[in-house]
Structure formats: structure tokens, C-alpha cells
Amino acid sequence: MAAMLQPQIIHLKEGNNTSQGKAKVVSNINACTAVADTVRTTLGPRGMDKLIHDDKGNTTISNDGATIMKLLDIVHPAAKILVDIAKSQDSDVGDGTTTVVLLAGEFLKEAKPFIEDGVHPQNLIRSYRAAGNLAISKVKELSVSIEGKSLEEKKSLLAKCAATTLSSKLIGGEKEFFAEMVVDAVLAIVNDDRLNLLGIKKVILISSRGTMRDSFLVNGVAFKKTFSYVGFEQKPKKFLNPKILLLNIELELKSEKENAEIRLSDPLQYQSIVDAEWNIIYDKLDKCVKSGAKIVLSRLAIGDLATQYFADRDIFCNGTSR
Image 1 (cartoon, rainbow, N blue to C red):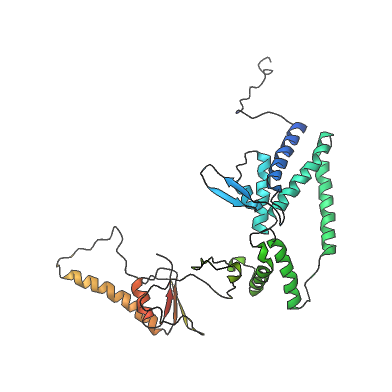
Image 2: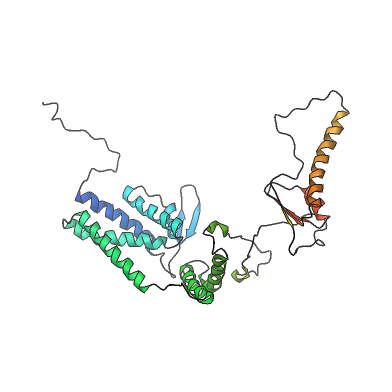
């Protein structure tokens, strides 16, 4: 019986404690509000940027809530929930990451006095859920439907929404210009919910006079291409209604794999092997030309030989980088 009454011995790491009940809840609230205060000054169009320097020596300057929350080395388990909130908001909506963190922090801050007065957390959660339902019903009451409106009215409302989200970004000074571009891009895939069909290509201008207003929307497919073959200045850069050939093969001469081995009984046979390699690549190129395509795109590499071969026949080609 005496052995059963012996006290338990708990080994804790340095800095840990064994607080329970009300004291632990208050401690969790304090940790979450401290994290919320970190990103509080980044909210809004006049929000300040944060400079974060990690242990690897990388420096990041941003006022995006999700970016800051990811870079913060948060150890407290309750405060980590705010990081998950920001990540979920960023992946589901793409905006409002700082707002959800601040709202969560304020809800906890307002609940702290009630916890200290002995109110059970379940009662507070029930009240917050009731308040959330009231807020949702009020938002629906104030909402403006775009159903039945003309295309111009829809674009105007969507542009206002887009401009609001761009107010706190680096391009906030040109938010009207980019808001219209974003709306046009979204409406181009209005019948498809796959947002990965939209992409951004960053092109560095050789001239330093480039501005943000040099950006433009391509209603199609855009990719980078460096013209490096002989005589590219005289070759056509524009095709109207061309036939496009899509490939999933390499159009270049490649060395054999490391384990490849060819045994020859006669040294004269070596030249026949070299000729066979060239015949194979030229046979592929001839078939591409005979198809009548004026644009050749491949998921794999297109070498210099194929590029020059197509260029001499006024055919544009592009493949992945080798």
C-alpha cells in the first residue's frame, strides 16, 4: 500500500512547467496574443514591412502575414495554431492571412478576463459560435449578388474586390491597373475552377526604364525563349493560325548512359554507329517538318542542332532547359 502512495517523479526540460487548468489556459492566451502583436503593424495599406533574419543567414522583408508566420520559429504548441490558421487562409483564399491571425488574437484577448473570472471555456466557445452565425447572417444581408448583371457590371464589382486586396501589396500604387488585369485573367477561365491555369512570368527588362505598367496579360500560353541560333533576326517571330506540334521526345544528340557498352570487332564499324546516331536525329527532324507544323514544342530538351534545323525552315521551336 505504501508503494502505491509514492509521489510521481516527472522530468522536465529546462523552461517547461506543469501548470494546469486556468493558469495554463491564460498562459496559452498570452502566447497567442504575443504572436498576433508581431504581425499587427503589418495590417492595412499603411502597414509596415518586417525584416526577418533566420539562423541560416537568410534575410526576408515582407508584410504578408502567411510569409511572416512561416518564418517565425514558434515553439509554443498553442501559438503554433495561429501559424496553421495563416497557412489555411493562404491556401484556401489567398488573402487575409494577417487579418485571421489578428482576429484570433483579439478573440482570445477578450476571453482572457472571463477565464480569470472562472467562466468555463465551453461557454465562451458556444458564445463565439453564436456570434459567428450572427456575423455570417449580417454579411449575407449586406452582400451584393452579381447574378443577372451584365458583364461590365460584374467586371466593375470584381475589380473593386481585387483592388482592395492589392492595397497592402508592393503594387498598391498601381492597384487599379492590376485589378483590371486580374479580373480579365480570371474571366478567361470562368468555366474552369483550376486556378493553376493562371501563371505569372517575371521578365527582367534590359533597359532600366521599365515600369510596372509595362506588365500585360497574355490570353494564351507564355514561356521564355532565348533566340540564340544563327540568323534569328531575319526569322519570323509571329505566326497566324499555325499548326502546332507537341512532342514528348528529345531532339538532341546525347551520350550513352554510364553503363552502356558497345563492343566492336572491327574499328571501321565505329563510323557506322556515329552515322546511325545522326540518321536517327535527322529522321525525327524530317518527320517534324513534313507534318506541316510551324511551331514545335516539346516537354524534353531540343538541342542546338534541331533549333538551327528548324530555324532554317522558318519553324519556331522550344523545349525544356537541359
